[in-house]
Length: 222
Ligand code: ADP
Ligand code: MG
Image (cartoon, rainbow, N blue to C red; front, side, top):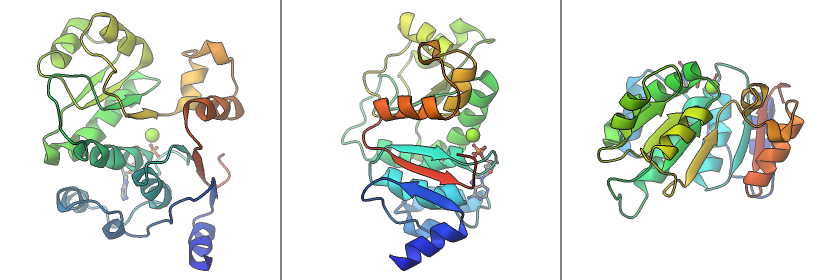
């Protein structure tokens, strides 16, 4: 309706896709439980960022998303929060298995930043988060993954493959997948197969792996 259009216009937000959930201008309307709302407030966040206002309700509705917004706009939390809710919604949390939420990041620095962000929100649920990336001991990462399993795993593609080969983990339980900074994943040649330039080819890939994605972009970055 008009109000939705107005909110999106004010945020310089462009949304495409059918039957897209309405944006939420406050945390209270996300449908999060008290535990998560409290941690968010404790971190001093007073309102969702632009991308969060639209991406969170869309993710909570179970849709796939291609999200594009500039650095520092809070994209990490925009996927971590719905991921946490998705995991908590599972009928039965079976222990000792691979991750339910899997996040691919192009570099170890980014993987470790996402890990820190995920950890601070996952704590209130007692969910286990791990990060695996190059430049650190494979054996240590193996040991971290192995006993009892984890619910959220962040990693660079190369090291994730190593961990699966070593049978430290498996992706059989994954039902919430994030490709963070997918454009840089291509730059670094992780998916040479798709020899690409951002953003068109990334979107083509995203279309192939996502089901009727909702595309959300803020500003002219996309
Ligand atoms: P991006 O991935 O879009 O570059 P990040 O997810 O790294 O951005 O977020 C940038 C910073 O903003 C982080 O320090 C994060 O904790 C903070 N942040 C995220 N959401 C909010 C919010 N709603 N209010 C205030 N700060 C936020
Ligand atoms: Mg980011």
